Every structure is written in structure tokens, then in C-alpha cells.
Image 1 (spheres, helix red, strand yellow):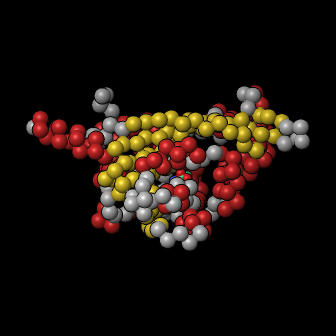
Image 2 (cartoon, protein in one colour):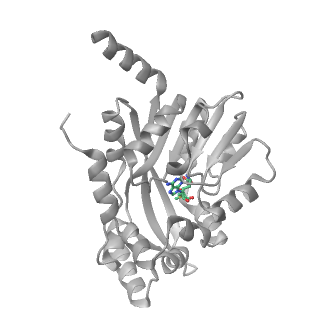
Image 3 (cartoon, protein in one colour):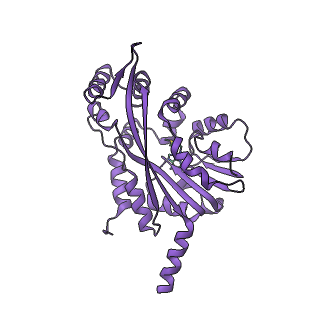
Length: 282
Ligand SMILES: C[S@@+](CC[C@H](N)C(=O)[O-])C[C@H]1O[C@@H](n2cnc3c(N)ncnc32)[C@H](O)[C@@H]1O
């Protein structure tokens, strides 16, 4: 494999990512953003985007009734709750108190969920156990990604799942109204960093196709990007040009979207085998 410093490249690309820069400009942390996120936007978005959908189905067969699960960057519990329905217990690491509040509300009193209200980097290895399944999905705002992934591997005794960005139809629309738009570094960085840590993982790309109400997209963008009327007009024109805007007879507008989730999974047993082969070779 090429001798590329993938975690250094990840750090650079994370700094260039328009969202990282936007939060910095606004003087907001990740936690501020999620603490202030409106509950109704979370719930509405979930109705249309088909997430976690097929990704969750991919993970479920690895969970059994005695399983201990660790969900890193658990958010409002999109995975925590369905996995807690199948496992003995789920530990959810989530630094935003707003997200923890939503997660607990969605969990409706379920007793086998333990919440650690901190960033993954701030959780000491000694505070954690080893888990049959470790999951981290769309939560990789971690400056030292190599260390973060190594800690995930260290507390996995079964399978590690990483879910991250693999592309989206909305990239060109973003670029039409956000002049300094740069997408997030995608899953290939995470895959290669794991590889350099000795973990040759599996990867599957799952593409969700869905229709999203234009009115909701506009609402989300007004919240996230302070979208002006002029920017909304430009975004709509781009969608139209690309044939991604559908007008219904009742006058409602819908956006044809696709979004690709990359599911990376690694069976811990493989790492043990690889390491013992290496030490046998001396
Ligand atoms: C987009 S949400 C994803 C939530 C959930 N994993 C899912 O896929 O539905 C990102 C979540 O990751 C959390 N997060 C961001 N940085 C984190 C970190 N360094 N450690 C743990 N969680 C983090 C955020 O607070 C937020 O709740």
C-alpha cells in the first residue's frame, strides 16, 4: 500500500470541510450545534431520509440477546434503541446533552441503556469494557482519528462497525449556494486508517434513494446555513437543471435525492489472527 499518512490527510480535509469552518466562524462547538438543534427537524428528517434503514438491517444479525453493545456518537438513538431491543445492554457515548435528552425521550424508559455524556476522545479506556459490537456512525469530528479508531478496536471483542459518508446527490446543489463548499472527507480515509492499524475490514456502500419535501429541505438549510431567499432560488434552479425537482399536482415540490452510506465492518478475530501470524514470523 502507498505510504500515505491517511490520518494526517483526514485532519487536513476535516479542516477544509465547509461545516468544520462554519462552526468555527460561528464560534460553536459540535455540542452547541446539537444542543440547539430543533427536535421537530430531527423527527421530520427521519421520516423521509430512510436512515438508518438498510444500514441498521446490516448490523442487526451481529446482535444477540447476551450481547454488550457500544454506540459511539449515539445522537438521538437511531441505532441505540433498536439495538437495545435485541442486546443485553447498550452503552451510548454522546457528548451533546440535547442529544442525550432526545435519546432518553425516544428510549421511553428502557432500562438497558447506559449513557456516557462525553466525547469519545475524553472517555478513558479503563471506563469501558469490551463489547460484542462497537458502532460509530457519522460522529467522526475527532481530531486524532487514528487514536480514536485504535481505542474502538481495543474495546471490540466481536465486531466493529463504522458508518460514514460515501457521497450524495446534493453535493452540486450545496456548491451552487455555498461558495466555499468542500464536502466531508469520505469513508475511504477511515478504511485506510483501519488498514494501517492492521485491520483489513469489509466495506459495503448502501445507496438510499428518497423523495424529500423541498419545504423541509429549505427549513433545514435556513437553520444550518442561514439560507437567504436568493440562495434558495439558486439551489432550486440547480435542482431543476439536474432534473432533481418534482412538482406534484397539488403544487408541492419534492427533491429526488440519493445518499450513500459506507458501512465498514471488521471482525475482531481477524486482527488476532493477523497479529499472531506476524509474531510467528518474528
Ligand atoms: C449526525 S449525528 C449521528 C447520530 C447517530 N450516530 C446516527 O447515525 O444517527 C452525530 C452525533 O455524533 C456526536 N459526536 C460528534 N463528535 C463526537 C465525538 N468526538 N465523540 C462522540 N460523539 C460525537 C454528535 O454530538 C452527534 O450527536
